[in-house]
Every structure is written in structure tokens, then in C-alpha cells.
Length: 387
Ligand SMILES: NC(=O)C1=CN([C@@H]2O[C@H](COP(=O)(O)OP(=O)(O)OC[C@H]3O[C@@H](n4cnc5c(N)ncnc54)[C@H](O)[C@@H]3O)[C@@H](O)[C@H]2O)C=CC1
Ligand SMILES: O=C(O)C(=O)[C@H](O)COP(=O)(O)O
Image (tube, rainbow, N blue to C red; front, side, top):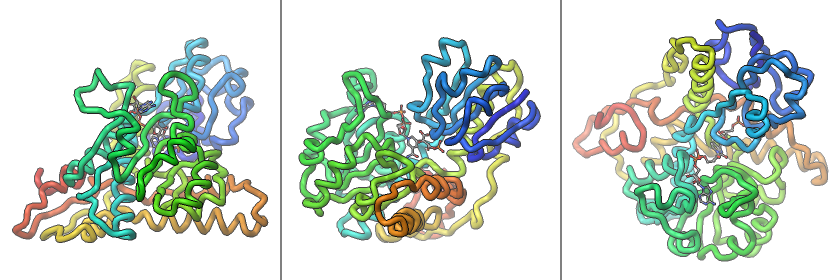
């Protein structure tokens, strides 16, 4: 069996190695010629899987995408050819939740105030949105939800988007990208909606770049410095609009979901699905794949301030490093290329390819050595305390 896998998918050899020959490929540049004799195709979000990619292949048994989003997959085409497909729903939701939570703590550190005093609106209350809410609620932050698709069938309270914009200090976006339908999300935050943001709103986008009209955002940010923006995803990836970058507080190359655990979970979910299709036991364990954190245990006496909470989260993942590297890589390249050449393909993709250092809160075991109650840190995701 020939298994063709994106070179940026970890643990493919460990999980699929027994099943056949593995060939790794650059997912963004994958051609129909490379795919034509594959039995299994494992992709990430950068590969458009459609008739033009699969047209020459008559033997595919499975297509798997180690992602939450499926906007790069022509599922109708796969169904028309009876090719089984699976993505990995929820695989990196914890990573996105922790990323957004850390980003909010970084903004507090930079601009003052207290996260606990903020009201945070989550647009899209599925896996990633709920993971952000879980972190915030563990820390007693007020969370409001907007999700017209599940409203009615989900027991949580939801409010209309305009009300959320009016009531929230922070808005975090967690919707799939959809171009049609009653609840389409393409340019959900268009110029009119961006203009309606309250004074001093913080807007975070960790879902898909095109949920915000990036040109309109540039225009508005130029006259509304009170709005603070965190962007992990960009319209036109891998070529973000360069003039937007300096207007953004925290800028990263679509890595909000890139914890080692999240990536491992994605590959593992595809392994489970393929084994099911092949009628075999999935007898490998995911836990055995993950290395221990360089310092797996920490004594915590108390969390005296939000700064100390930020310091604890930075111990696991310092978002500022990715922000700094992003600006250096994209903007330095652009000045060399005299502002006109927006082709930053390699820089953006290379940062993503090399992003292997981040762990989730759960990788760190906390030991409570003081009198104060720090058990709530387990609800935030850390191991040890309160468990
Ligand atoms: N930056 C990154 O690294 C990552 C980005 N993503 C992106 O985030 C998206 C969301 O991921 P999940 O939360 O796991 O997906 P999900 O499918 O679990 O949840 C998405 C939610 O958005 C809701 N929704 C759809 N249209 C809406 C609208 N117009 N307004 C409000 N809510 C709407 C749906 O009802 C659903 O509850 C993915 O589709 C993917 O594009 C996901 C993982 C990592
Ligand atoms: O899961 C998703 O959806 C995402 O956006 C992923 O985090 C994207 O990662 P890649 O598949 O592009 O590596």
C-alpha cells in the first residue's frame, strides 16, 4: 500500500509505517502525477483536494485531512467517487483555546486592565470556540456566545451578533469559512461590521483569514487605533497584506492550532479512521508518541496576579516569539523586495513547517506547595493540581 503524506504531518511513520510505503510531499505543491498511484492520501489545510488533484488516481482507499477545517476538500467529489474521507474534528481545539487565552493575557499586559473584568464574545461556539470559553470560564471571565447554526439545539445561551458586538470588550472568531448560505462567514466582519465595533474593542481571528475583510480592516485601523487586533489567519495566505501587519498587535502564521498534542491528535485520528476502514485494530497509543516537556513539573504556591498567570502560560508557550519571527520574516523579506512583491510563500510556510516547539498546558504538571487555592488551574488545562 502506498501512503502519500504531507511532510508537515508528524508521527506518520510511527502510526502508518506498518501498513505500507510512506512518501512525504510538499502539500502546497502536490500534483496529480504524484498522487496517481497512492492508496492513501494524508493532507493538511494547504492541499486542495479535488478532481484536478485526484483525476488520475483510480485506486484511492482513503483521504484524510489532519485538520478541523475542510474548506480545502471537495467532499462532493470524493463522495461521487466513493472515496472515504475523514478530517480530524476537534484535534487542535485545545491549542486554539489556549492560544486565544494567552493572546488576551498578552494584550492585558500591554494595554492594562484585568482580563477578569472583561466580557468576551465568542463567534462560533463549536470545538475551538468552546475551548476558548473553557479557558476563560476557568478564570471566571464573562463569556457570551453567538452561533445561529446551533442555537436552539444547544442548551447554552446565545445572543445575536450585533448584541455581542455591543456588549463585549473582546471578540474572538471561531467559525468555518463558508461562502454561501444563510450563515455564510466570508467577510462576516466586513467594513460595516468593523465600523460598528465599540470603542477599544479587541478582535481576535484564529479561524480563517477571509472571515474578516482585511482591506477594510486596514482602512479602519488607520483611523481607529483604539481597536486592537490579533491575527493568526490572513486573507490570501500564504501572502498576507503587508500593510496590515504593523497594524496588528499579535501576528502569527496560522499556528494557533499548532501544539504538538494537537498535531499528534490529528494524525492519530486519521490512523484510527483508516484502521477502521481496513477492518484492523488501532493498537498504537497516541500518548507514547509525545515527548515529556523539558521541565514536566512546577511548584505553584499561588497565582498572585494576572502577570503571574501570564508568566505561567509563557512557561509553556511564549506567543511573543512567534509574533516577532513573523514580523521579521514577512516584513524583512518585503522591504528587500521593495514592497511590491507579495510572494512570501516560503517565509510563511517555512515558519509553519518549523513550528514544532509548542506544548499544551496539560504537558505541565503543577504541584500546589502553598495555602492558596490554585485548583482552578486544572480547569484551565494544567495537570496535577485539583485532580
Ligand atoms: N488557526 C488555526 O490554526 C485553526 C483554525 N481553525 C479554523 O477554525 C474553524 C472552527 O473550528 P471548530 O471550532 O473546531 O469548528 P466547529 O465546526 O466545531 O465549530 C464551528 C462553529 O461555528 C458555527 N458557525 C457557523 N457559521 C456561523 C456563523 N455565521 N456565525 C456564528 N457561528 C457560526 C457552527 O455552528 C459551529 O458551531 C475551522 O473550520 C477552521 O477553519 C481550526 C483549527 C485551527
Ligand atoms: O485544523 C485546521 O483547520 C487548521 O487550520 C490547522 O491548524 C491548519 O494546519 P495545517 O493543516 O495548515 O498544517
